[in-house]
Image (tube, rainbow, N blue to C red):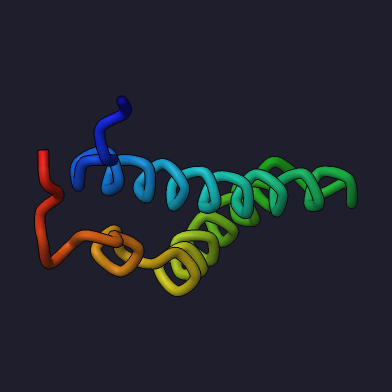
Amino acid sequence: MVDPVTDEDRERTMLYVKVGLTLLVGLSAGLIASQGDGSIEVVGGAVLAGLVLGAVLAWYLVPDASAVSPASRRRYRK
């Protein structure tokens, strides 16, 4: 039988989702800037601005691990 997902696993997974979302937004901003024939400074600025925007979006869109935990207030029986 499979054990329930631990709180540590749930928190680590949410962290991976937040980091992945942040990197996706940041790198896509850099790709768009490079496709527009931007200089290296412009592309770097776009990546930096995209990373900041991605972090804000990840903070807003991805819930805390305790919000999605079905048994956050009680323990499973073993």
